[in-house]
Length: 135
Image (cartoon, rainbow, N blue to C red; front, side, top):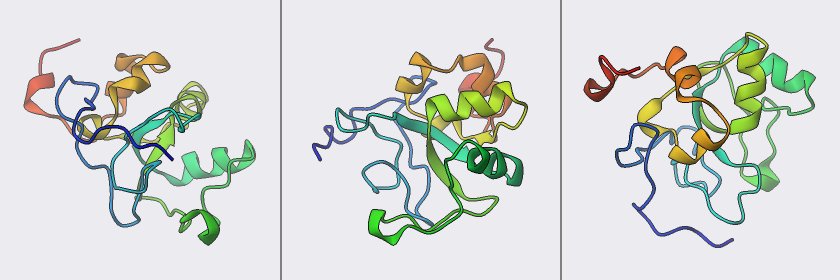
């Protein structure tokens, strides 16, 4: 796995990419951040605070996020956990009315290649000072 240069990635607000979660340890590179690189074919770039509805929908789509998979360093998620999710999967849930909350400061700007910023903002659970008044 080739990791990107540390601290070079930006969030959807244009600032430095902040950590998403360490309990459980998330990120494609399992470093707590939604960093991405050439090996991350799914683009695990949206920092989501998963809900029961989001997890249920993902399971229905064949993406079981609740069952532990220790061989991949995956503990299984519970509602309220923060996890770097695949941008297209988050967008599917958004369109179906089952989107998870989003931590904008920890969501990689690369997610904007798939998900409109306006959709992410609708589900923002962090409201950084620099977003007030922007649309």
